[in-house]
Length: 234
Image (cartoon, rainbow, N blue to C red; front, side, top):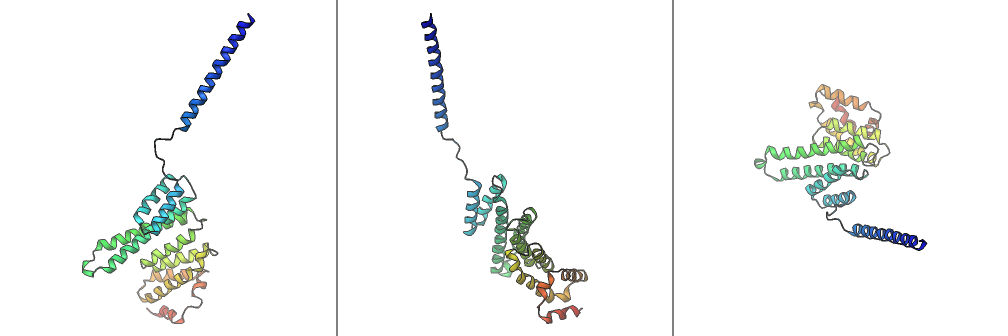
């Protein structure tokens, strides 16, 4: 009787062992199978590839890849850089469009040519603004702010550009762009002075308000005295 019970116990134990071995082998087989779907590169790889395309001048392809980076948002540290690089692509496209317009004969240049350039510049301005508003503490924020001023300058909006440059000096006084923006602000100042007689009263008042800001002294302290003579002209 005891031998019968022992044999049953051994049989049951053997059955459990066989089942365990079978499950283990099945698990190993399933885990060793490669997925049928080809996985896409990580966002970091996408960003690096987009950067390479940008450096090669393939701006449209770079924008397509950056759109994927911004859509998936799997790695948050790449989003500010991708946003800034998107703005850079549109700015470069605007520059390319402007060069194309300048190369053409005036008779062959259409309004649409200028519209394309302005549209790219609008998009660049929007993306740069997103960097400043969404990621003000990021190391690229002051770069983006300087390029916002640059976009305004290229449009001939010198007062707006000067205001942005003053904002940069106030908000990022220790940033690397604060050292470079002086020359940009002075260039705006020269442009404003050159067109002083054509400025409407509201724009003149706006300019005087800008000069009342503390950072203004840093820009205009040693400015040529003959520029100030414009103030007395009507």
